[in-house]
Amino acid sequence: MKQPNNQHTDRFEIAKVCPVCGSCRLQRKFHVRHVIDDPQRACALELGFAGATVVACRECSFLFKLQQPNAADLHEHYAESGEDYLVSLAEEHSGIREDFRVARQLLTEAFHKGGTILDIGCASGFFLESLGGNWERFGIELFHLAAERARKRPGLSIRECDLVTAKFPAQSFDVICSFDVLEHLPSPTPIFREARRILRPGGWLLLGTGDSGSLTARLAGSRWTYLCLPEHLSFFNSNSLRKGLAKAGFSVSRFERIHHGERSRSVATGWMRGVGKHWAIELFGENIIRLGLFRQKTTEFLVPYFFDHMICVAK
Ligand SMILES: [Zn+2]
Image (tube, rainbow, N blue to C red; front, side, top):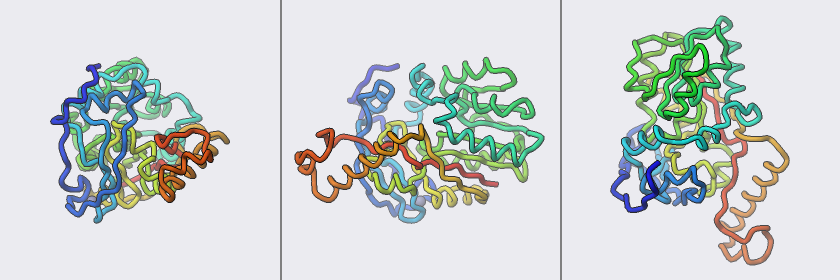
């Protein structure tokens, strides 16, 4: 990994139009401070920014960061990420990866005999492997360490590249899936167009990402954890995702709201505490913290994930 360097302010670009619909009717929503005290998140400084302005498109309601790291830096960052980042994906932790469980169930119901599937950003290939040998399984992954691990799993064909440069032949796949990838892309729509080209007629595009229309996202505002991870750049809700997919020729057949992470009483109480504290500060100002109502006397906290992810199936 490169050494953190906050002098690289020339390394990001300022987005001028909505990457989903092309509109220039943008509304500033809030400034977010990136999580940088976690070693995995030091990339915020490597990529040249410790915070960002989140804007909303007035046409399609897509949310995105105005400051976008350049493609070469992002590519290098993902290629060189380490073991800690791979562990943080918790691929094999079924209590955390509700997205995998829901997706597997949907695919098993719709494709009894399996088929040909491509996983965009397949990490170490756990999801592909878990589908079983009925499926002809392909994955692409930019993260070198993850791709190496995926190659060790039997029955998977893995390439280290992005979707557009992979240049798969037209109509190659029955299913294209992608989990936790869209939010990392400065411009998510090219993969929709490429997915349309390489999917067979009637094939499925199955996507998992955060939901900026969820109650958590709306209540947590600038303190929604999802916005504050420096590698997250793009934030769909069901409306903007539907519009982005429609532009590429897809129609959405299903949305499922899902939780990401452990389901426990402590997660629920942590969420309630975070939302309550956030709104106390929004309504009464930062001095409310001094009154001793809250366990921790800091205004720097985040509202954790709570039913704020979604699975979308488009055809
Ligand atoms: Zn838009």
